[in-house]
Length: 420
Image 1: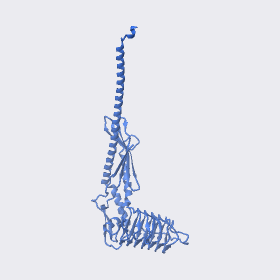
Image 2 (image 1 turned 120 degrees about the vertical axis):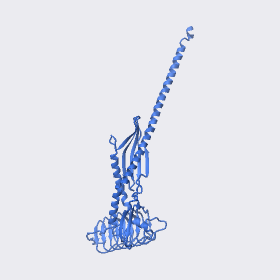
Image 3 (image 1 turned 180 degrees about the horizontal axis):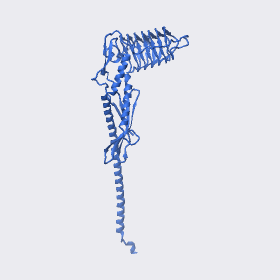
Image 4 (image 1 turned 180 degrees about the vertical axis):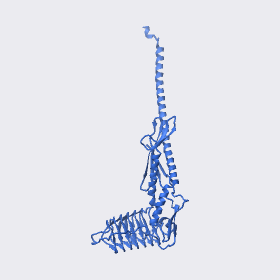
């Protein structure tokens, strides 16, 4: 039974077991090291490609800013807008800088879209360009899919994507949105006036309709000649039955007295009244309309407000004459008054910054604490000239200052970046 105590060969087994254990452990450590190395490399590539994508975003923004600077120096858009301003001034005797912002935005949009196409160097179907940063490591960024849009406030936005590449590793795309707000410099031009100061020249703002047939108005209780009509009255008119003035061009030779609630408002209409006019009842909105009154105006409550409209009053104007009315909104509209204006503490809701009231005579009755854009030479002659730009009966001219920048700032004012 001695063979049970024979330990020959045990050393060899122990050695083999030890080698096996260390080999397994070594392989595990080696595998873990290799895996960690790959992960570190992938993480480094992810960071590097992300940095490259960010670099591409910054690069393209600078390129866009350089292009806008060049565009401004060339003056092509400036020339177009100045020609439009001159033409409008000659025709109407007035200009409003807000009228040109949309055109400026559309012109810049067209120039940018042409710039995108001309500067593309991608081999695929995308519009954009690629830049190599490190040839040895095949490191580069690509900027692609640039687009331009304009919103309702004429804010222009450029959106594009950028991605980084290191070897075969491609980053997730970064989306960049750049916004541009621009203004025409009000100090880049002047209205020079010489001669008479008696009367504001308002006749150029709304032209008198011509060659209109006579209005057929047989039964005042049934027919509404102020709805879907293009005609003229040769006598003054008293309107007592109907509830709307819409989709019409009507000339009234004399006064117009509206003594009825216009529940459907005044909409898409040119109303030219050679005499005075009174709207003693409520008007449910004045929208997309031009109203000329050759005499005085009495105006009560305007529900739904005055929107996208121009009102010219050759004489004086009284608002809220029943002392209980409101004008519930005043957006993208202008009122020109050749005489005095008494607001009688009228509450004008939502007086939009793009709207204005120009009064050539005295101003009374603006409620305390209300910030209305009311301009009059009796308040501030300089502001009246700058914002109303109307002739006072003498020789007038629109003069541009060649030493002043035409645009206040033609550049991006807001940047937003989204990481996918």
